[in-house]
Length: 395
Image (cartoon, rainbow, N blue to C red; front, side, top):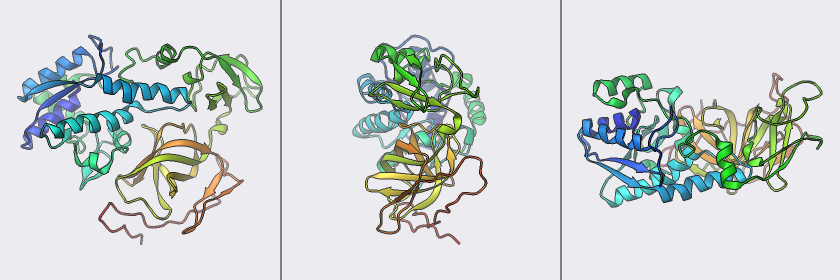
């Protein structure tokens, strides 16, 4: 119970469903602040008190579990290391993977509990993860990293309910958090200033800002303060010759060089990702046509995905912009999550999926943004079904 409306309502629904419920608040900081500011964070002393009051109203036992050291090691230090390596991490995804459905679930099972129930907006059917009914609040993207075993120990009672109805239900139950603002920022950066936080952790590491030709345009205090697709705060001394905005195209952490250029320089058609996790299907033996979501609040788009050894390769049917290494690539079949992997590289080139038993072939042509036709139509092979189920058949 984070101290918000969603986890409180989820706990109440679990009680209504006949489960024996115990409320647990996670202490994720060794020195939590007393009050949250607006919608920042979810780990303050105020949040712990809100969670306790909600548990009292629901009528369930309540405990605080100290996860500060594990959270620091698995989430905060990972966040800093990823930025230092020129990648853009998603700490909420890592928290779900390493804390809520690993450390917390392991302790809960050891204490005799069957599952961890949270206020996430997603649905589980027969052990498979699906998007929430409220697409605007859907959190399946940050849950797609969970393994089948972790999903087997998870409950998401709010997945079928729009957020406004959840707030109305909480008010009807007499929960004081019914109107509490949602948390949207990185919970361990209380003031929301990611650059200042990283500077405190990593110190200044000056480098150059260059254009695609290598011309030096300016300097920076740390490449970790930038992310692919960023437009504001580039600190470039002069405008582009054509007057168009510049964006961050690439970050090279070794030389501390940040490359900027026009928006079309962000176009990506090929994505390579590592650590694939399959929950909605078995690892596919052939290329599959599906949808992919590339950021937490991004739209899903058509792609062809296939395994190349331990790597997942994805070819987009239309180019995408601002795809940042370190983010997750989540594959969907309509609303069903097939699997996910962590993006390690992108390219504007096309890689054709291999024939059965063959190797992928990379071509030197790429579709230009804005043209009407995609020059290569990927094969539409049947998508594998969830483990133990036959694959759906296309008619």
